[in-house]
Length: 223
Image (cartoon, rainbow, N blue to C red; front, side):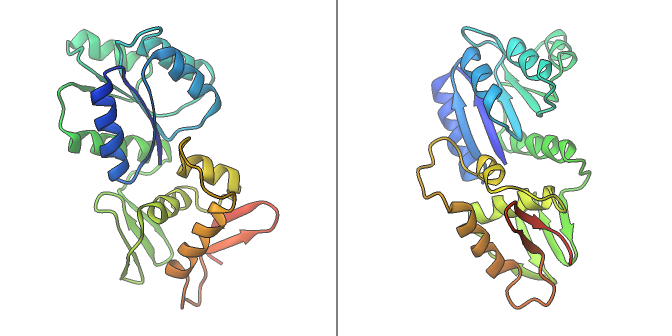
């Protein structure tokens, strides 16, 4: 899952990026509302963490920009504005959730998971296909009841495929969701990680779940 953090407090911004990255997310960051609007106009995110009181454009303006483009990207307001009227305004403005500073990072993670599940139409923390199962809370992956050890990027890739099972995803779409702006690797990075994932998910299995669609990309499906 790729997340944008728009927060003008640089220390908090840095801490959020570090902790979210360690928790397995791909993260981009910005420090004012105008920059956030520009980034969101050209990049798709699975969730946005948005401060309200930012320079150049506040969080409400950023949120309006997102919704005016017809995007349903999950947005969580992370703010010091803690009155009931502030919460009501934030949610009525189109935010999916509202968390007041100071906050527990574990609660932020739980709220992000809940938002992304909802945006993909999932009601459970378990993603399944055939005998493949992923628990997005414990980050445990099994196939046929046997646990599979995945690197952070392999886990992100499998999670994205599971959320989009039966949908053909282009290499560009996958790269956009799994790697951030700082990535400077090779152009075949998606193919490389699909190969890693195939060995772990489909290796030794009669039923293959990861399929190549020639000229289009990859799809996770049965059969």
